[in-house]
Every structure is written in C-alpha cells, then in structure tokens.
Image 1 (tube, rainbow, N blue to C red):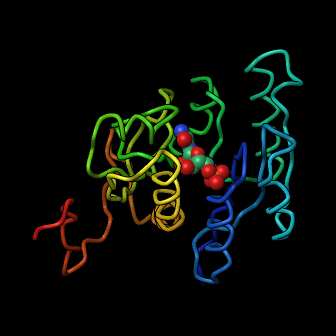
Image 2 (cartoon, rainbow, N blue to C red):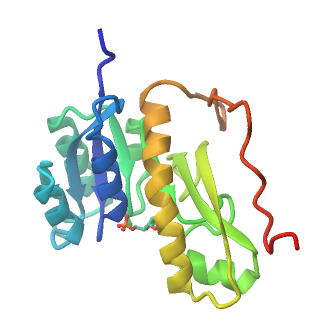
Length: 220
Ligand code: GAR
C-alpha cells in the first residue's frame, strides 16, 4: 500500500511564488505531501488568489484584527488544525512567531530563507549580501526554531553574485532556485527520508557522483 501523504498547511504573507512551486510539486502522484490549505496573515496577499486558482483551500487570518500575537497565533493554530495539517511550510510568511507557537509545531514546521544560513538572517538579505561582498549566496530550507531564521538545515542551494547585481536582480536569481529547493526539501522531510538529530538534519541520500563544486568567479 502507498504511504499516506503528509497534509501540509502553507503560511504566506505576499505573492506566494514558493507556495506555487510547492502546490505544483505536490500534484505529482508520487510526491509524499499534499497541500491541505494556504493561510495568510494578510487578506490582500496575491498568493491567496493563486492558491484558489489552483483549487487549494485558503483562509486569511488577519493579524491586525487580533489584540496581540498570542490571540493571532491561537486562531492560526485552530485554522491549521481545522484542515488536519501534519506539517507547516512557511513560504514568505513575514510574522515573527512566539516560542509557544513554534513549540506547538515543533519539528513539524519548515521555512525557506533567501540566504545561506546562518549568514544574513532577517530582512534585506540581498542588500546585506551585496554590501558584504560575498561571491556566493543562496537559499536554505530549514526546520523552524524559536529564533528567527534559525533551525536544523534540510537543504541549501548556492547562487553566484554578479558584480552588476542589485538587490532586486540577486533576489530574482535566488528565488528561482528557491522554487526548486523548497519542494525538494519538503519531499525529503515529508517522506521521512531525513531525520532531525539535535541541530542537524541527517539521512539524505548521497549520490554516487556528487555535484561539482561551485567556484565563483569560475576557474579560468
Ligand atoms: C522568498 O524569497 C522567501 O525566501 C523569503 O520571502 C520571499 C517570499 O517570496 N522569506 C524570508 O525572507 C523569510 N525570512 P514568495 O512570496 O514569492 O514565495
């Protein structure tokens, strides 16, 4: 008998391009997760319309209509439970969460961040990467811990930084790779192929021939 698919609730705040990539990946019959719902803290988020167009249930839980973070998160938690969610995937969800909420979804909540963590946590990631002069940046899919953009790393992808880059061009190059990385990381996690061991995620299959190193600028 085929293994049960994990039911995933996606949290968004904006355009939802990573959400779209997860919804698309989950359409494959052998993908180990199905998208149970998309929730947004911003009722006007563009991503909600995209999710509806893809036939996914949506709900807006507007953080502004609650007295505080705890009340907002109680409602968010209730919404996730009402869709029988097993795993939560944050995809551009731009609200800081309380330790209590993270604890409730401990080891069951993932995030994608547009840097090679632990570098450049927080906002303005790409501008800060450019200012630091790094030659490679990228994105990280990780398990959510109470500290912002922190937690065991499931997968990372590296992207070259070009001299002509602006924060916008770099963001566009990185987000294109996020769309490949996040479905891959969610699949590894949802299938049980990887496990959390302290602060590390272990058990990913190692290919017979590992990818070539990305050296930037490239060797002559
Ligand atoms: C993505 O680049 C994601 O990595 C980032 O927000 C963007 C959302 O885009 N998330 C964070 O910075 C979390 N700290 P999207 O709505 O098109 O997926």
